[in-house]
Length: 391
Image (cartoon, rainbow, N blue to C red; front, top):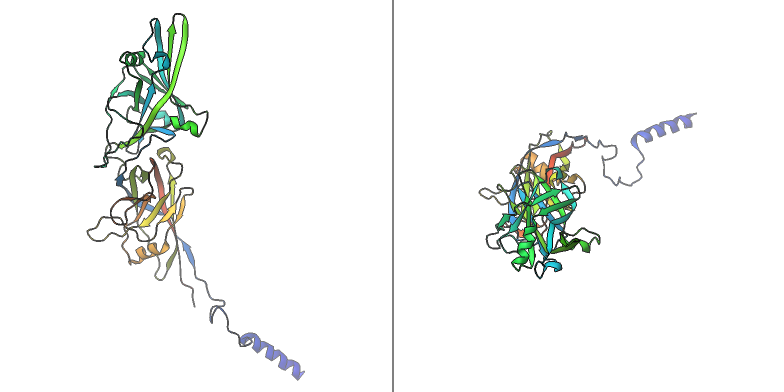
């Protein structure tokens, strides 16, 4: 009975003190059973303000792309040029007895934005142009202009999947009689409503065999016989220019060709003393009606602006991203530095991947850039902070 009572006392003491086997806890003394601390997810921090900035206008040649763009949005104007050779049936002049009944241009639409707003006008270019030409002055880096005259009685019809330009037959007849070998058309928006048409260019058949390549169609009669002559473009291209100063300053936009980035500013909330930001995510939505891209790599970085210096310089290494999701991880130490006051909060900058300004001077990382742009909306910042664990 005495032995049994002694054994129970020994077990009780051992259960309170633990058995010392000589081996130390690999986590260190005091960590077993320690409070991990509380984690708090803050409500989404809305955007306080945003501003776009123009970085660079780059001479971009778009004559070998599979698309032609026509439209206007976000302060950008897109115009297309088309050249058609005179049909062989008329290349030697208009034969006696031949009567031109109709003349039209047929275009196929690959995709469209706000097509219900689309209104176009057809003009005759007065300036010489080439397909492999840039429409930016290489010295001043300012967009160049193509002079053109409206074609009388030309009517442009925009349908869901195609564009038809009804032209006066005199356009072709006068060209033939003057000994010209081609007919040229400049297509541009008519009015101020935003829209964009992505039209098949002549290079599109390299990607899609049945692509509806731009076509000039002439219907004519010789006696009672009705004939149709059709030719595809021998050259086509498009270019982008700014109107009314380009994108508005409060538009959150990223663009290439005409390089634009955006700065995002947030009013950050206070967090309790001793708490630490351990997660930061930027969330955003893409305005698809106002964007044009297939993929758009861009980067996010914090801004450090020295006194008297307006150049955008990186706080941390950029995150190279594509907009396949609306959530992007931000370096949480940057947010912590802003909240603690260790670093001034000048905001986040978003910039196309092709553009960098680490030295304060614009430089291209990849060339040639495409003409594309990305418009963002509903930008917010999600933050999570935690308290240190209690000892």
